Image 1 (cartoon, rainbow, N blue to C red):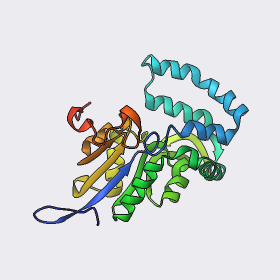
Image 2: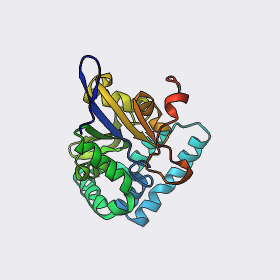
Image 3: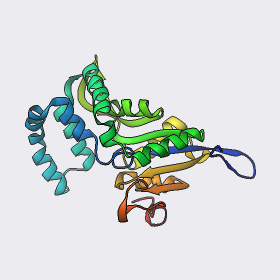
Image 4: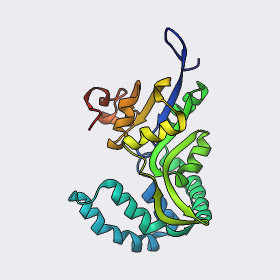
Length: 226
């Protein structure tokens, strides 16, 4: 059965959007990827530089998006694009079974089988997540790393793909989201706007224990300007 929903005049196609980190995965993927790609010693030397920016973020003198930009600049300045893509492929192969939630993989497969439009929408760099999206056989929207002459500049193009930016990025790819029956899965503050926009939101759907909720509370409690 295809996930198409009838109204009085037409058939509405389903757009199924999955957050990645913490939703389809057990935890964040970007920091583990950096550790994998650079090795423990080089990773340790570089991550030390993040101590003061992180403290500034805790004190609200630096936003989460700004902290993300510092992290990318610290690790991914003057890095060859080809090297990063190779490391991303290797990371996916090495960490797939450790990182991915089986229930999440099953849900993605079910949406594909129902002929929905299916995509990951994540704040993590798209270049890092592309092998995961390819293996799942779905589309990917993520934070875009700037590349000049095959080398990463340490900057991102546009904004970090979280909160309201997720809606903007989805609209750029799919157009007016009201033309779809939007189904969404998320687990953090960065997914609130996405879940609020969905007719069928799922909050921490693949989590086990007391945090699991099949229907998102965001639909009721979140205000659009929050």
